[in-house]
Image (cartoon, rainbow, N blue to C red; front, side):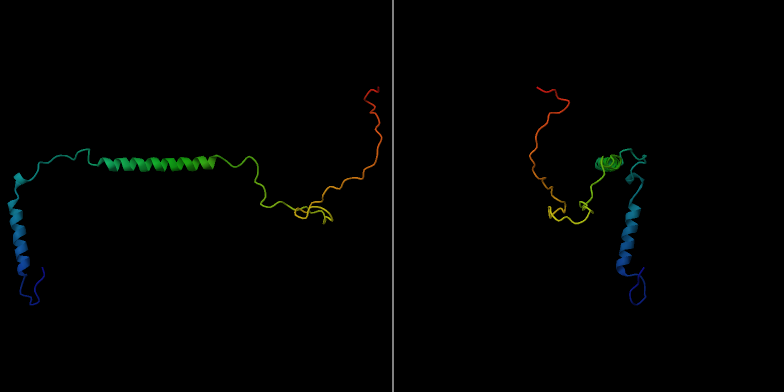
Length: 123
């Protein structure tokens, strides 16, 4: 209900719009209206039902995967340490410099005479 800048009354455009809306409202009668019916059961379009079903199934699959991973359990043996522990028994003078473990030293070779074992019968 705006008025022009002078405050004299409604603008001619508003008067024409009001007259057109009133004429349209008077031209609609009971014969133009559709009969009353209760809403039908097919109110939801089919793609929306399929989309909801697919989203529900995906959510169910995700929940089942989480339960499977949680219940499956850990490994049968404990995890190994990230680094191998170094020996704590002194510094080796000979050996492998990368691992720090001493190398086996061969014993001096002595000639031995073989003796028969007491449990083995002799010839």
